[in-house]
Length: 385
Image (tube, rainbow, N blue to C red):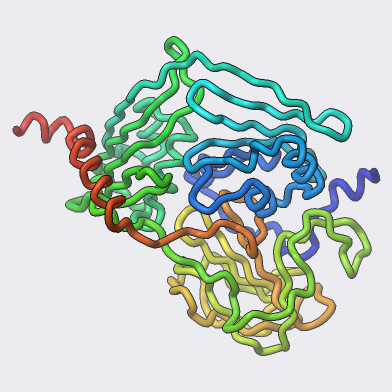
């Protein structure tokens, strides 16, 4: 394979200096592209999960054909995988239960399975602290890992801007950690409480693998699947190995191109903050919106920009008009969705679910929260009782 092609960057992109500036919270959330960890949630299938991250479809087909048990993924189970620079699947790990992991490694054109029995013991762990400098720094002082901090910020990303926590604000975290002696490899966030001024924010894990507030209400927001008033023909899909129509070189196509005429209204797919709104190189007129902490959407080749950087937009707001600016072969909208800093297929990606708990599920959750709430109390509250 030509090395030049391996390192070729996507050409439907803004200038490097116009990328969204990352901070310390982004650093703990974003994962290495070649090694992804994922927690199975409601409605997930293995092929769907892998498709949204652009993993080679043929590799996924071979893996699932060899090992049909992989169709039985359950909510809450953790999977991880590694890929090479061409998005070919190198290995896949499936944690079936606390002490049972299956690992599938690619050898030639098939996968070889091996089992690992884990002897770790799961123990509860409670961490409490007070903001002195920043949430990330102060959480680390209390022994929380980068992965644990990332899970906390994801759980509360729609309720709380962690950058606006002030000195004196408090946090209380309840985890379950798998211990190997005095060390641990992985953990699960069970609940978190953050006190920001006079307000308290809770995120509690339910049986369905999602987090809810203390009343069983959803902590997520709905997204539109398409950034347009109605669906349009897709002229170029998400493809990490696309042959670029202008340069004729292999370059990742990190989004989806919708064939729409110039002047078609472009909509924000979710509530968020406009981070960038300007003309930028190959992307032409370009908008980037941050939604919560995990999600960023990008809109390129616009004829006109209708928002400004720093502006808060709501789901369905008109943010621009489609066009043919930048490096483009004709009028269209190039749309990208990034999760945890990685481009994913916006047409297949798992989007946030904003449905709250009801019926028996809600009753079970509220009973669970009654037991958890005292464990999240701050020391000062214990002392005052």
